[in-house]
Structures are given as C-alpha cells and as structure tokens.
Amino acid sequence: MGTMKPGPRLISNIILDAIEIDARPNSLEKVIVDIIENNNAWDLNPIEKAHEWRDQISSILKNEYNRCIEQGRQPRFAFNSSSEYKIQGACFIEPIDSDDVKAQKSRRLWWKKYYTALRNIDSYHFERLSTKILNLIGVQKPKLTPYSSDQGIDFYGRISFGDLIGHGPIFPVFESDLVVWMIGQAKHYIKSKVATPDIRELVGSAELGKSKTFAKSGLYSDLNIRVCDPVIMLFFSTGEISADGWELCRRAGVVAMDGEMLANFLADKSIAIVEKDGAKEFESRLFEEWLFRE
Image (tube, rainbow, N blue to C red; front, side):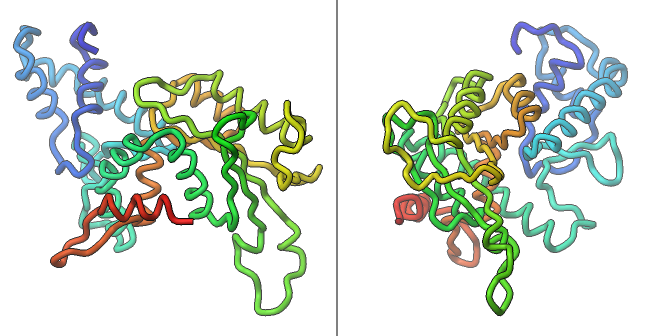
C-alpha cells in the first residue's frame, strides 16, 4: 500500500485498515481530509481532493461492504443510517437498532480478543477448536482426525435435521434419518493467505472420503457417508483468504471462515465471557478451559 499512488483506492485502503469497529459516525469528506493532512509528503490540497474523490471513495467502500456481506464476513465499517456520506464502525450502536441488534453489536466488540486468542494457539489446538465450532453449530459428536496422516481431513461430524429443528414430543418420523455431514480442514496461518490449492485439497479429500478411499486402510471407520447424504465442506483459517480463494469457495460451495469470521462467531456465542463489577469481559483462561474441555 505504501507504493500505491495517492488517490481514491489508497485512501479507501487506509480507511479499511484504520477504522475501529465501534467508531462513531464521521463525515467521509472529513475522514479523507484528515488522511491527506497526515500524509504531508503527498503535497495535495486536502479540502479540494476530499471533494473531488469523495464519490469514488464512497463507491469503493460500498463495493467492499457488499463483498463482505456476500461472503458472510463482518465488515469493519458501515454507512450511517441517516447519511450515505457518513461512515462509522460496523458495531457502532444507532438509536434505530433493535434490542437484538444492539446486543449482537455489543458482543462483537470483543472480536479482537478472540482473534488474538486464535492466533496464539498452535496448529493442533486450532484443529481441536474446529470441532468445538461444529459442536456450537449443533453437531453432537464431532471428530478430530489424527494430527499427522489425516489424509486432508482435519475434522468431521454429522447433524440430523431433527437436531437442527428440534424433535417433537413423540417419536420422530423422518427428521432423524435426514443427515447432513460436515467435513473440514483447518489451516493455522499467521502471515500466509489461504489460496486455491488449499481449497482444492479439501474438496479432493472430501470427495475421496465419500467413497472411503484413503492411502491407509482403516481410517475414519465412522465416516459412513451414504450415497444420498448431503455433505457440507468447511474451511477454517486463522489468517486471511485470498480473493481467488474466496471466489473458488463461492463457486464450489465450500463454506469458508477466516480468522476474523471465526472470532466474530465466537463473540456471538459469548465464549469465555464473564461479568466483573457489572461489566462483561473476555477471560483468556476460561477460553483455554473451554478449548481443552472434552
């Protein structure tokens, strides 16, 4: 970004990198002026360029916001409900927000705590955390594969339609027999981005898993996917996913979650949140206890 020519794209990138998730509403022009003034080497007229570039920057930010929503990611920012030329943190609480929205925004303010915790654990424990994610989704007995020789599958489990919708008061009719399998891979990346080869590896491994075709016999004895059972492929990473990686996931139907998405998911579930002196806080010790708990 440092070598990019000053203009709408560079300023948009700076906004996306710098804005806090709970930032108060601010005029987009004022934000642009502040960025230009903080970069004296550009030798630009801040007010003039802010007026000239505002619409282009607004369009870039809107496209980025929509792309995040399409991918199921939490945007860092949002446009204020009263004006499309005011931007704010995505979790800034507005008066028009419902009680449920306010509560969820408040929970997601902890996302950085979870993000840091995810990046601080090692690869094995990140794979273990993936089974915990399945459990939160509703999978009763998620499985973690051997850390080595896992044949490209790190975790898996199944959930019945009955578990998703809740069984009735008497014996189930058909919903227990309608089973969805979840098969996934977990990549603990800090600096590297997930790219298309990682996604292709998961898809290939899952397809082989359907027919129980592995390099070693006897693996995954309880991975009994029937011919007509639907399979959801999951890809979890502590790092980022490349643009090509996201596009391949979209086209292939792979459900991917990067580090920020996982952090927001855990924040939504209030994992390891305790109340102290009337305020709620994330407790790293409780997070570790939850992670190691069988």
